[in-house]
Image (cartoon, rainbow, N blue to C red; front, side, top):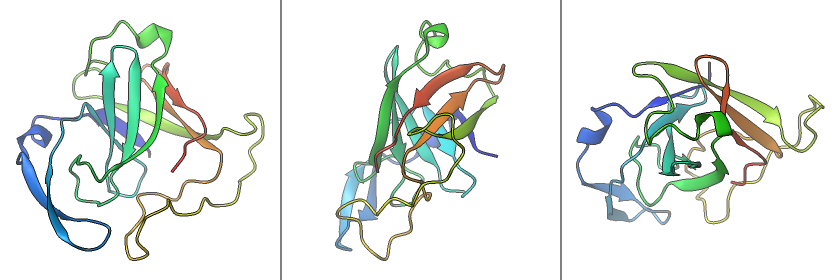
Length: 159
């Protein structure tokens, strides 16, 4: 199942700086950024949700697959939080210890269930790196609250 949850306290205990490999394979030091939520699309590698304001969310993919939110992670999309959940404070879109569901949909033709051709890799990505997920062209993601309401809808994701 595709889920999203709050970033727990153990996630925030990561070191402030970490050694990672850049696209050319060189070891560089990166600062680890704070994250509000973690999302996973059944592949075991997390992605990150950052709540920038009370009514905005940014969706990132963990491109280096190290489980840490660093500068090398790619922004997939940004959106407004639905009106019902906008009044919630930062990091309170989900109740404590609960997870929400992620539902993928075809963002190009919202009423069709056809699959679209696979997207190409993002420019500058190395051939040897593993992709987080294989997103189809025109795919969107709905982030659902445990009570069944929609928290945010990311339309046509651009990777």
